[in-house]
Image (tube, rainbow, N blue to C red; front, top):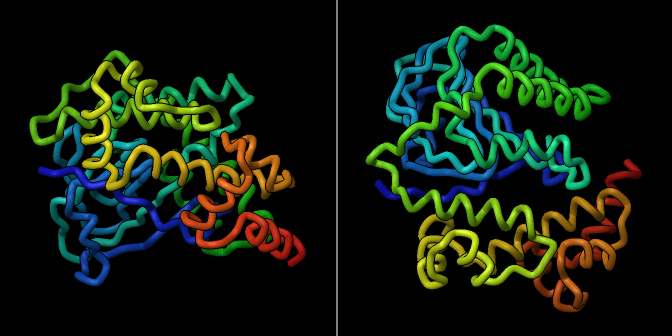
Length: 293
């Protein structure tokens, strides 16, 4: 079975959380649900009625009311089936947004646990009323959007991360790859992790070859197959969206471009326009307008 890369369509670029309520009706089930796919965001499927059958490297299992399926960072997964009258929430969040402070080495160790030991977390979580309570609160805050809801949502997600780490993380239980999953995907995972840690420095195919132990031509082939884009395209897109996050904090466009690895502002501006659709200065104006509202 081929593995497809899916970029999660976050409704708001500066608040990378997506919560969608779904049923087993045809209009609610996208094609990406059925195909074996992966993305860089954490995903939780929280079932409220009926049942959803899901597949990942841990196996195939039915998830029933008050049970949760967890697809970790870059973990391939897909839906297999649904019972009638099923209702569930798909909750997706950017791990970098929760634990992405590059200066905070203490928090970085927990982020690395999710990235480097993704398969050591339970995918199917049963009988955990505490975790269900966290998601009930996140869903409610996200729906009501009362003053300060962004802070509350992020705070509860930190509780989710802590709870998963304490109760559903077992690094000694590394699971063997299932035969239906392409083992070469592990190389792509290592490449993605390297890029996410070094995006602000020059990255060459030789760097990635040294990191993974495979040839540069094989890296290009695998990365294109698993992500649908080249290594350079992925790095440029990542840098542009990291620059937006820095601009949002008050950093100038020039400072942001330097911080994410671009020494030539004109080149950064062209790349930004290609991937984001607007110029970096327009992005800053839009952020300033949002802050005035």
